[in-house]
Amino acid sequence: MLAEELKTLLASILKQNLTADAWAWLSVQGDFSNVTAFNAAFAVMPRKTGKALIWLTTEQKEMLGRLRPGSSIDGWRADRLARVWLLQQPDTTDQDKYHRTLENLFSAAEMNELVSLYSAFPFLHYPEVWVERCAEGIRSNIGTVLEAIMYHNPYPAENLSEAAWNQLILKAFFTEKNLTLITGVDQRANAELSRILLDYGKERWAAGRTVDPMLWVIAEKFIDSQIINELKQGHWEKLEA
Image 1: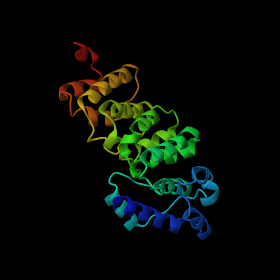
Image 2: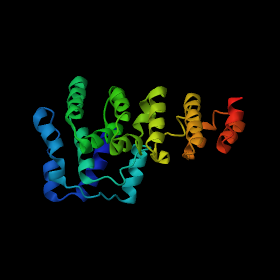
Image 3: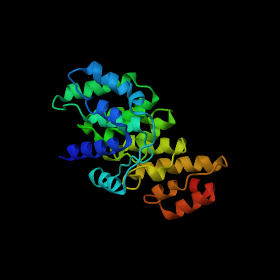
């Protein structure tokens, strides 16, 4: 039922953002019986829907927040949302075929297609089968791909192991992402992550570089407040004693 409500909501948003011709074309896509045609529809999406920024009503934003807490599609373009909606359409009773078909899209995807694929994770069936793919995406050096995984995307916080989650957060620090936009950053804080970030902070400060204040927000939950204060002040000799 939840999946159907999400599909209906995204369809209503697309209808108000696309031309009548574009919606007429999109609404008949999504048939897995012809995988070649499905892949082609995914690839040509920008030419069919355009790339205009979508707009949502307040009610639509609130409904999305209720149906899929932690997610947001603010700032998305029409082709991105249309691709995500397309990935919701196929019959999912055959899990292997469903997984295999979407995996093939990843293998051939260019940057904007990858953004859409990773953005779709919170809306896909069988969340457990995408864990390795999500962890692989974290290793990407493409900023927009990382942001699709990190920003307003509840999938990583809900499904990644502690080690993979910690890698995501560390990558966010390394690439200077906005950690306040990462869903679950507070809830998934853990002692090992705090230790890793403390070492990272020490290295940054020793090199005379600044540290994102979110480091303290995450680390201080698991590390003695005196150590945090000394680290903030750069008192390395106390930390090493």
